[in-house]
Length: 336
Image 1 (tube, rainbow, N blue to C red):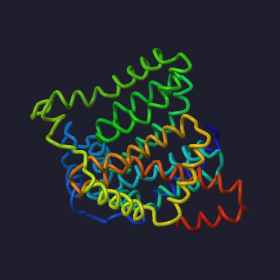
Image 2: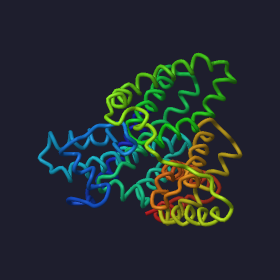
Image 3: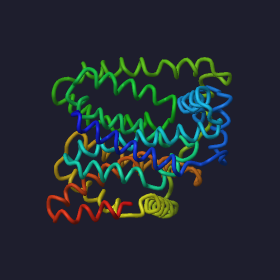
């Protein structure tokens, strides 16, 4: 990673953070956000799916060592996570597209999409979730090359992700399949799987500590009763409509069309990073069909809402090579 790349990522991340601070919820919010704001003052750390110990720890540290109220500290931590995620989106989109334009479109598409923006202005966990997924995407290429630090780091990130949201390790497992194929082809599978397992074992230790000390017991904490189902044909069409409408709401500009162009380009010239991106996109589009509770289905779209901006950056870069330079500039304006 060059100094110019790091500088661009920091600038985009800082700009997004400034946007989120300017639009930050000024005080106590409602719903799950209120519960997380309360935990910023009175932290409770557990291994249950809705405990979010990493988010609670971060917001509590902001409250403890700043003059902020618990509510504002929890909101500001969400803004910080969202801003860092946008900087990482620039890096991943730039790496995927090979152009600064692609990086800019990818970062902006994430920064201003409705889900990421709204969850970065109040106490919500999705900015930190996006950050985890983008770190994993950033590690795909060096991990596929068998670099020891990247392989161990990716395993550790997956282990740590259990301290946040269960959808993260599931998505990571699917997105890692192309990397595993590369390892097998290059005869590195045994060594690299062992290194990844070592990193995972180190990363999962805090989660195991919380799990083993859970008052409900490890089994009840791991499996709290959430059920999944496969919808029949009659339920499939409403679900397709739900996913389509929600994605159109999250990405109201040309992002989806750009992502489609980027996806077509990825299919025509597949790389390990592109395969992982498409696997992440597929995971995010598939999981909502298995979850029965309509109000929370959008949560399972999270991997798709991270992959789509990166693919949009790749799509913009592809169009820039075919059309005039005025078109990408107009697309950037359209994104905002």
